[in-house]
Amino acid sequence: MSFKRLKHALIGVAVAATVSVSAMLSGCTIETSHPRARITVEFNNTEYVMEYTLYRNMYPQTVRHFIELAEAGFYDNTIIHDYTTNDLYGGGFAYNSDAYSEAISDGSMDDYLDNPSYYLEDDYNQLFEAGKLTPSVYKDNGYTYDKNGNMIWNDGEALSTLYGEFKNNGHIVENGQRGSEYGALKMFYNTKIVEDSASAQVLVKTAGGQMLMCEYQYNSATSLFALQVGNSSSLSTSSYVTFAYLSDDEDEAALDDLTDAIADYIDDEYNSDSDYTVTVSTTVDRYEEIGEQATEEEYSVPKLPIIIKSVKITKY
Image 1 (cartoon, rainbow, N blue to C red):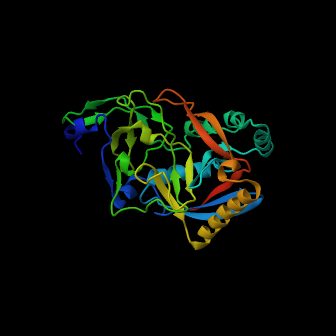
Image 2: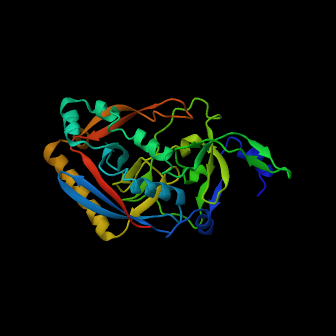
Image 3: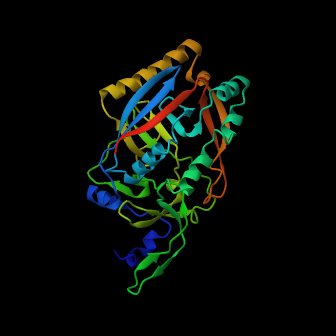
């Protein structure tokens, strides 16, 4: 494919990358189109087990990333750090029962989230540096031309973030895709502070090996995910990768049991969802390389923890 004709379209904008199933299958090594993951959540001393079907045929790099993190045990014994009515956010902070309880009781949850023993950005980057996570996003080091006048991108430094495989980032799934629905899992990214959006561009490598120039904002996910627990969500499929769904009715029933248990606990102990949580401001994205500044986020942390006990891949 000649990049010469695309030069002007590529600079500063995301290029549509229509992805067919055959292209994705040829672009990465896989064993099945729909791997599975078993997620065990503990709430109030009771475990809830849900099996998920991962859509690698539509979102190959996102699913590979999630599997690599799960295989490394990254998600085990982590917390839901941000509780909302429609989505539970996790994948960024470890659980320590004594420290968590103390932080809730004495109003120091901000210290808990800032503690490097529990904030897992160091752990994530160590996995990346050790080669445990496959890169898909690179710094833009410019381009040269081959003897035929085709544009060749210079190899740039690999970033630890993930290519956003969704519509607003140029990833189009042929024959449509499933929407945002109850129980869905989504890779999540915090909103970035980028003063000069024109310079905040990165190269991404698609599953088929094509290099595209895209906005960094959409390619900045690391380990965070959102579990949809409502019938609607603010995280649309056009801007977030919805890569996994509950496998069957039994798994939906398990999630129902979990959400019912949380609702019952709130009814018994508090007046509302907001009373069940403590609002905490914390610094995230401390190793920001493109925006070059960390981001301040506000989380609604549950007073009684919702714990991701384990994420295990059961089918590859």
